[in-house]
Amino acid sequence: MDDRIQPVLDLYHERMRAERSAPRVEAPGGRDGGHDQRMRAIGPETGQLLNILARSLERPTILELGTSFGYSALWLAEAARARGGRLITMERHGYKSAHAREMAERAGLAACIDFCVGDAVAMIGELAHKVDFVFVDLWKDLYVPCLEAFYPRLNPGAIIVADNMIRPGTEDVKRYGCAIRALPGMSSILLPVGTGVEVSRFEDTMPDAS
Ligand SMILES: C[S@@+](CC[C@H](N)C(=O)[O-])C[C@H]1O[C@@H](n2cnc3c(N)ncnc32)[C@H](O)[C@@H]1O
Image (cartoon, rainbow, N blue to C red):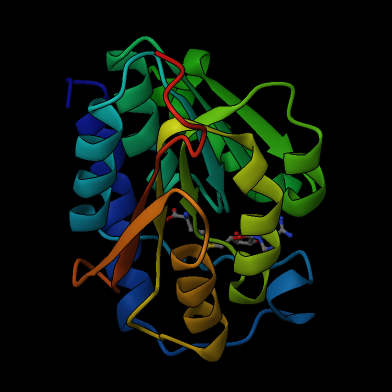
């Protein structure tokens, strides 16, 4: 991490510690009411894993589903920049996405990020290009609908990482685990990193023409 990124990550780490030690109070209107300040961010271990995996790809188009306040986006954008690629990050709420953009600007990474605001399932359907890496970290009941939307848009060799597969490990994420493992061309493994990540790789299902 370069000199501009680490101090911004440290600001998030401070906020993360405060969030984890504070009692959980429901925001007015609930998680979608427009006042939710909880980051619900992955920790540094999952961030590092995302960064290592994404750095293994050349000129990757990286898709993040669930920007929140922008912590995981920094790890992904750093990898995208290092490999000559881009990050497209999708978030339902404009106020969260705006904060993420501000932090990415402070870290010097905003130029390689497209911040998209709206419903990820609908926006995936409007993507102009195929993708090489997907990070799935939005509300858990959307994991399978998102998978159905991005599966036809994966380039061969694409890597997909889904968070919260062990904690909270709900029925919704279990359904995602089963669904991705059943897809043609997919290999997948559950890793006990952070709250548990399902790491999958898509191979082209077409027979070799040579
Ligand atoms: C667990 S948080 C993401 C945390 C973030 N990846 C990080 O580690 O910093 C999930 C986010 O998904 C967003 N979200 C929920 N439903 C969505 C939808 N349909 N489209 C886009 N974003 C959505 C929520 O607003 C929330 O900010």
